[in-house]
Length: 367
Image (cartoon, rainbow, N blue to C red; front, side):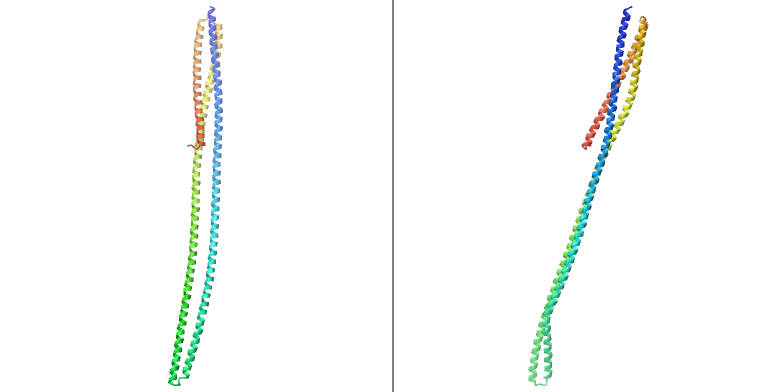
């Protein structure tokens, strides 16, 4: 009878050692799980901080881009305004210059025309005056001859014929002189007319020159206007392209932020569910461990009190078998918890890698 209690004590000690060992292992596993969840919580907090920094950085980038666009827009507007002012000033200066040139040319033309007219009139007077004097002398001579002819008409026929012949010769000479004077006067008038036509042609050339200058000025102004319009159109196209590019980049960053937020929310939900499930499992494991300890103490008491009772030993063996089965079940639960934790680790590592890749792509402007 002494061997049976000794064997039973030995087996109870072994069972107690195994149970205690399993309890210690379970406690260690629970501690590791708790530490792991704390690590997950810390990683989640880090992800949230990174997401907040990313949001702040995106806002700063957007404000910086807007500031640069506004600065460039202001610079281009200032440059365009300066060009327009310079253009208007240049137009005003050219207009004043051409107006002064037209006034100077008009005054020069009027003065020259007056001088030419005076010179032509003076030359005509200088040439006509001697002719008029000669004509007057000739007319006076003719009148005198007529008077002489009237006074001497009672003279003899020979003297009359001689006088008439002399008078006729003198009259013929005077008429020839008058014809010569008229021819000279006609030549002078023709010369004066040619001078007037020449001055008219010069005036026409001056007017044509002024018209050409005005047309060139208008053409130059139109070219400047076209250049300004082209600059304005090019500036608007650049602003539109930069706005479109900025909008695309901002939309891309916003989509990346939204995706990251959704992933963080999904991880938070999964973490909360896992934490809840693990807390329940840990509570159950703790209760089971406590129950095992209580049962072990009760078994030890019952075994010490009833060592000689084979039926109770058999029952205790059955209870031990059930306890072993429960421990195996707890081990399966812990194994499942490890599997879930490993899956969660892989998911978090994948999300972390995706965020790192997305951040690098965004930094390199890769779609």
